[in-house]
Length: 525
Image 1: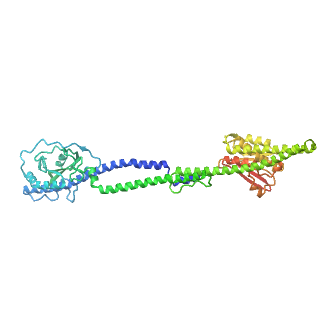
Image 2: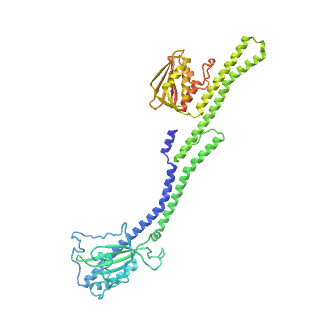
Image 3: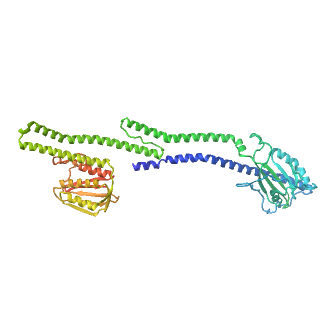
């Protein structure tokens, strides 16, 4: 049974782990949702920054062209776009800065200083690109401001024209020749627009500051800002694939629920059906669950099947036992009853010799019944009562049994362990039966008792005689209850059955080796 259960465990999971896995997946849902929202927000901020970079580059180049034109210049010197530009480089990509873990700053501080004399090429170039900025705002919803080399706003889509913004950290970095981006909290008195509106409704506004180079020198900067899309807005735009994903998730959830229900309820219904059939008296065994089934249900089915077989075997045993006992007791009872009736009928007219013979038969039958009842009680105690193991001194016990045996007993205890944990009465009774059996069939010759330790940890008690051996026909029935070839000598046929019962209570065995030179019974416990 242990091998079967082990095999069942290799092809199934414990219900504890199944339930923990399902609960873990349920617990992961809100965590994954939060992570998804965070990832969506990070991606939205990054995409907003990328768009602002692209738009800033175009605005910067448009303003620089007008700025050069206002000075009567045609173009920059070849190969000088920014200070770190090498002549062999063709491309100068600008990487986004708002990636991964970034902080959200407070709103931008209002300017405190404005230009007193907004004149010069930078201002004229700003005036030239003002329509471009306004049209870009209509389509891209971006706020753009172009600053001169001193940080004054020379072109704007909104407020702060002429204001100096060099107090802002991203503007300082841009005027120093470095691209900079920051994320700030969006502050607005207006309510958030609807999901279907083209206006964005995020809580984070991205600001970028891109330096404008001419002949490797910073001549200005483009400061732009745009509100990033919030996760709910992104979810609204992706509502169709999200709806599809929701339907698929719902379907998978139902599928997993049905699978778990099938894993538990189907085998339990089958086991219940088998148990009900057995309870109604129908013969059969508990149906073993098939396929992927939790380990506990496999174990339950195995345990119920084992219990059913044991109860069936026990019922069959009781039936056979009752029939055998009835048969064995019927003969002496009939003999006693007949002798008693004759003694009553004949009374004093029966000769004394005949009366003594009848009385002797009554006493012999009564004695046989007593021996039979004692052996039956001994067998019943071995098979039904707890073992009550104790430490047995093998040397002492074997010498005591040898002295009590009618013939000489040769002891071989060289390989015997010193102690053995077993019920002393069970072991002593089994060995006494083997020694008495060997003494009766050994023709009065000495018998041998050898005790040795086996490789699997068991102890072997081998009792050998020098008798004529056991015939093949009797070998098949030698351990059957009430089978004996010495019924006329008072044999009960229960001695070897008791030995076998002792072995089985220890999950051991009894082996027989017989031939013309004698027989050896080996008790393994």
